Length: 149
Image (cartoon, rainbow, N blue to C red):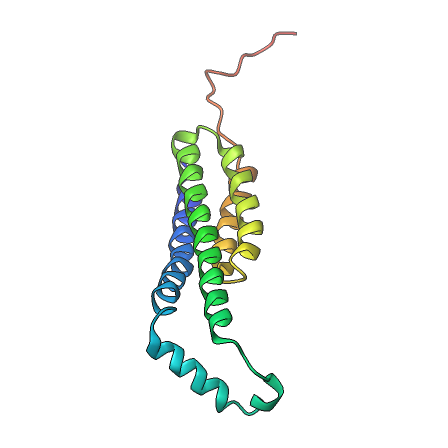
């Protein structure tokens, strides 16, 4: 049985998980840029609630930004890797149940793991996983033995 729909949805999910990879890579590259740091400081000073925020330590804020971007990058790359594994399982109808379970678990966990950035990719993985679990393989008529009673 061909699993074209599941494979296409998984590839769409992988492409959509590529967006958090791209965004987090950009964040990691600009976190040490002094111009970006000055712009953030200006934005914090001109914010309407600047008095309520108190003194913000920019070093801690930039470190948090780097850690946050790294976390999202790792989660999205794991999701893409599990998508590739699922496609391998779906190709040739080898292990569609295992692929479906991997896709569903990845969709749920990594939607939270990417802090919502992978929501649409998670939906694509979830639909592909459900279809992989629900769709039954066709049995050849030659494989089915008739029993005479």
